[in-house]
Image (cartoon, rainbow, N blue to C red; front, top):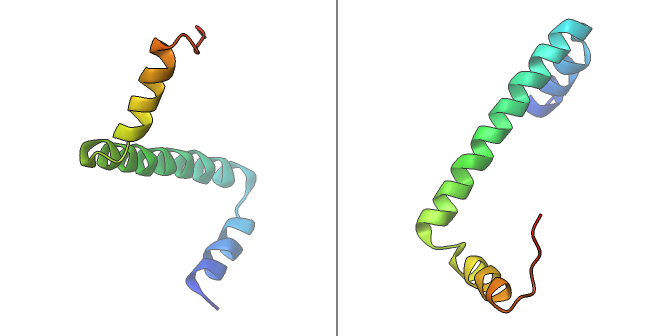
Length: 66
């Protein structure tokens, strides 16, 4: 049995209250990982091309206010 299989089995056995605590923890964990990845991509220049394209679209009048 793989580690992932063990985790899935353990999560499946959680009581409803424990599952909600796990879900909230996992959501926060996932958000933090995503934020760190965006920060790395931004600081390394990986998002520059996308930002430049968005700015060009806006300057060309092809955007709208949200």
